Image (cartoon, rainbow, N blue to C red; front, side, top):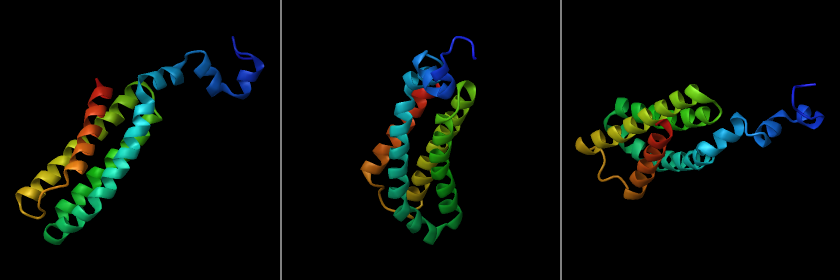
Length: 139
């Protein structure tokens, strides 16, 4: 038998750790539920970027490819980070933050070069919110 755990906890160790205030409970307290909300917002941003990427691709395939990779990296690293602990979690969120900043820079370049007109303000607000929450979680 594991030290300090009742037999029921052996069958369900994750919920046992949550009840005992272990790493899983601390992760949830530190904002894992925020990360889940961020993930759905990231997916909304990706959906909103589809037509923008298509317009950019007509003029600059490389920029469109870079934007696509950076945007997908936000989702992938946010999801991966929510399943990690400690320093690994922070590193994944830092990578997601860097990708979110790169996504914004790609959009700025596309507007500056005239590949697209103004980017939808709602889409930019969602991207800003994702960046803000990631900044908060990597401190």
